[in-house]
Image (cartoon, rainbow, N blue to C red; front, side, top):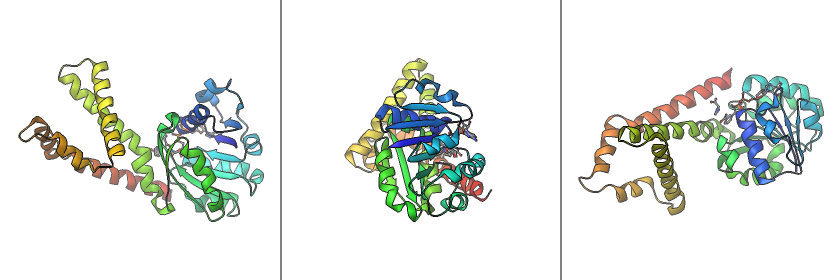
Length: 264
Ligand SMILES: NC(=O)C1=CN([C@@H]2O[C@H](COP(=O)(O)OP(=O)(O)OC[C@H]3O[C@@H](n4cnc5c(N)ncnc54)[C@H](O)[C@@H]3O)[C@@H](O)[C@H]2O)C=CC1
Ligand SMILES: O=C(O)[C@@H]1CCC=N1
């Protein structure tokens, strides 16, 4: 598969890193006004860095647009004449729906909306996908690529905004929880580096337990909370401060914001 990424900032460069680590392409064009974020990949086999978006489209079968919502319309417009019915056009832009993309490049093109997260750089993204009518026949192809870079789920387009909050913004939410745990560990006497390792490995263990056992989080919590013990004391103190409520409210606030962005 000949792949191009247009926009190699935070997410585009993460996708590039994941693709390169996994050797998931026959050629990879990385196109940006400023390719500094992907400079390290310039010596990789079959990778070309360019600032020519049109060339990247012409030389590729699958084109991933990793641009901010405010830039995507202009870039799509400028490359639209070069987009054929065989191209697989992927957009990761948050809040930019398929109808808006079809309005620029046409509904006769394969358009796939993909919502990965930055863990794609290490092959651990939770990635959601949906396609326009024409793109339905190509969604399997896109899914195959993203399956190599983590876990995928095909969803209906009306859930993409929610998936953006849970999976893409979710990386930031979980990072903040990891950081807060580190801060607590430092207060209890650990050096910062030790505290970071304790927090991240415990976080990794908790996620792995859920994934590998298939059990509900509360079942795992019950296995940790010794009666009258320290865990239930801590958990209840956190809940009195509104931990679950704060998370749910944050998720809803994020969702409301992304729905406003969509209207702009
Ligand atoms: N950062 C994240 O974790 C996630 C971001 N997204 C979405 O992905 C998109 C990109 O986000 P980021 O990578 O964070 O933004 P970013 O600002 O880091 O990257 C965008 C890149 O586009 C480039 N660009 C701007 N105009 C261009 C043009 N005319 N031609 C070529 N390149 C151009 C910029 O130079 C920049 O490198 C956004 O729509 C965002 O909503 C979606 C999921 C997760
Ligand atoms: O914060 C944002 O708007 C983008 C979409 C999800 C992650 N970053």
